[in-house]
Amino acid sequence: MVLVTIMLAAFLMMKFVERTGTELLAEARAADRVRLRREAYSALEVTLAMLADLRAADGALRSPAQGWGRPLDYADYRPENGVTVAIEIADESSKLSLPRADAATLQALLVQLGLAQAQAERISDALLVWTQPDYTPASVAADPGRYARAMLPHKPAQRPLRAWSELAAIDYARELFFDEHGRATKLEREFRAHVSLFSFDRINLNTAPPQVLAAAGLDPAQTGALQDRRRSSAPRRAVYFRSLDEAGAVFGASVTAGKFGTEVKAMGITVTVRDGRAEYRLYAAVAPPGGAVLAMEPDRPAAGAGPAATETDEIIKKLDYPFKVLEIREDVEAPAPLPASPID
Image 1 (cartoon, rainbow, N blue to C red):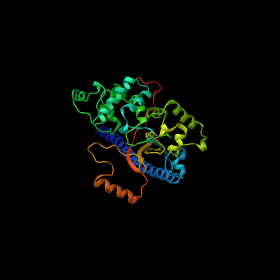
Image 2 (cartoon, helix red, strand yellow):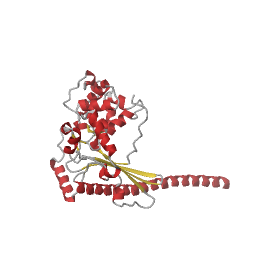
Image 3 (cartoon, rainbow, N blue to C red):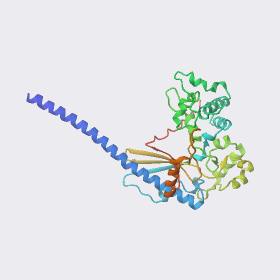
Image 4 (cartoon, helix red, strand yellow):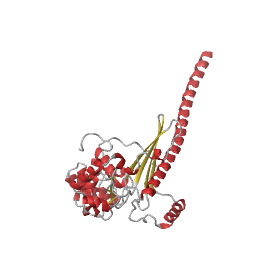
């Protein structure tokens, strides 16, 4: 009886220690998340303050050559002991604005990304059927009625994409953007890298990659001249366009056709905070005054309309906040690296 009692007590004690250890680990992770989250938002505010300073000094945000690369060093920001903070800033206006892109521009970009012309036409047709209520498909294969005949009948959204995950619901596009296991393909990741879900009217010539420039209408000679200009700039005297007049002197009058600009319309800021094995990632998309906006559904009021929007605008005006926050996501996953193999 004594031995049985001792064995039972030892077993119960072992289970108690195991459960207590698991609960302590969960509590520690929750505490780490709160602490790292606070650090991430602090670093984000410092970054926005740095961008506001640069914008005030130079009149506008135009290029990373203005000093975006090390925002925390610019402000002499020091995280708490043992914590490291990394900031990545990307110009969303270096991409095509999907809510404003037409079929020809989308097709040109997809061809630049490695698709055949027939595939590019079919994908652009499918995307526009899903995102635009009044779009007439150029091909019978993109007929909206196909969705009603699907295994799970549904209708095209006929509004701008709210998230990239919606691509998995678009007929034909999902076959090229995702593999048989539902994982994003190289084409999907490259498409996301060259297209923005935000609505803005001009692509930033100072930061746009060659694929976007070509899709938006620049010829190979103009695109090559811009790339040469960027490569020839000295690290401490990087050259960027301050106006379309400067760009027109290099590329000719055709660059002022209405698709291009020289200012940032929206920025994506990713903050990564680490402490040992604990990690927290924060993503925020912001726009300067007069910059990008969220793409609205056809039956919804535009940005700035309605009593709720008016109240928000008044709050921002009272705070004198330098940017409009378009999107915030917490604990975002790190982007997967692009594979070396070509697009199938």
